[in-house]
Amino acid sequence: MKYGQCLKNYLRKKYQLQTNMINTITCGDCFELMDKLEDNSINLIITSPPYFNCRVYGNETVGREIHPKEYVENFLTYTEKLKRVLAKDGSFYLNIGDVYFGTKGFSRNTGKYKRKTDEHYKEHKIAKQDGKWLQHKQLLMIPERVAIGMQEQGWILRNKLIWEKSNPIPVHSADRRYPVYEHIFHFVKSRKYYFDLPLAKKLGNHRDVIRTSVHAFGEHQASFPLSLIKPLIETTSKVDDVILDPFMGSGTTAIACIELNRKYIGFEINPEYCYLSNVKIKTFRENLIKTKSE
Ligand SMILES: C[S@@+](CC[C@H](N)C(=O)[O-])C[C@H]1O[C@@H](n2cnc3c(N)ncnc32)[C@H](O)[C@@H]1O
Image 1 (cartoon, protein in one colour):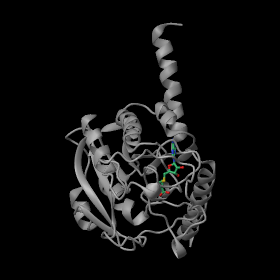
Image 2 (cartoon, protein in one colour):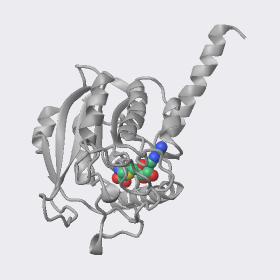
Image 3 (cartoon, rainbow, N blue to C red):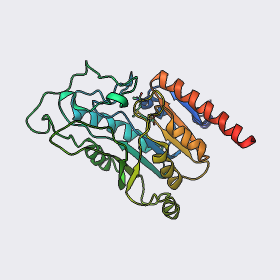
Image 4 (spheres, protein in one colour):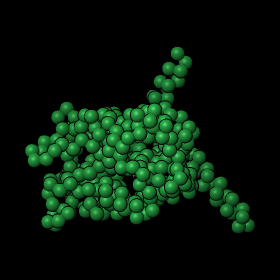
């Protein structure tokens, strides 16, 4: 076969793969699945990966590193891949939380906030204290370290959004203030990118602090709220654009995309979450059709 024909066949197969992924949640490791996406083909990426040493999702490939430095390095291999698939005028919203080092390094939902899947990852070993960065009670500054690493990869940081939670999980620490926010970094690949500031103003979403509440989404422990991501999607992508969430969890991004008439591509490694989110999406679509026909 001639080289030209070979290339054509190869590209057709590749295109086909990506087309098949549209409006589905593919169950698998996003690190591998991202290789099936074409260069510059995604208009917006919005995601929240597992945080360092925080929650147990099952077979996650990020978050269980021994040393926080390894977490940052590992996660940066994902952002490198994401950069290849993002369109030149696209954006990447990265929601990432910080943790305190020591005593298993994290706060946990307790009492009425406890969810079925909220359990300690007991066998997780973390690095020993080093008297410097790694000291008990130390806030690790992981989001900032990831963001700096991404700048080194060539990403341009446009905003460091603060997601202020109006109903944060109560913490019981007597010698520090209560943490009530998480970071959402807005990264782009090039200086010219799509962003609708007038719409952001209309939606009251033009400031770099976003206050909204946290809701549990079914069985998933760490879903971000629709009220947080919908205005981000609306202002930073157009109708019919393709939105990628490589750590789809309970399917929040997919639901937001359906509501806003965007296409989505979702990856999720935990089969139980894949199943739950697909059920949720199906029910959501059925209700949507019902409401429209009434
Ligand atoms: C913080 S949660 C995402 C929550 C999501 N934003 C939502 O609203 O439900 C992170 C998710 O990433 C998944 N995950 C971890 N490693 C993964 C990988 N390599 N590929 C795909 N998903 C992964 C976990 O199973 C978990 O559901």
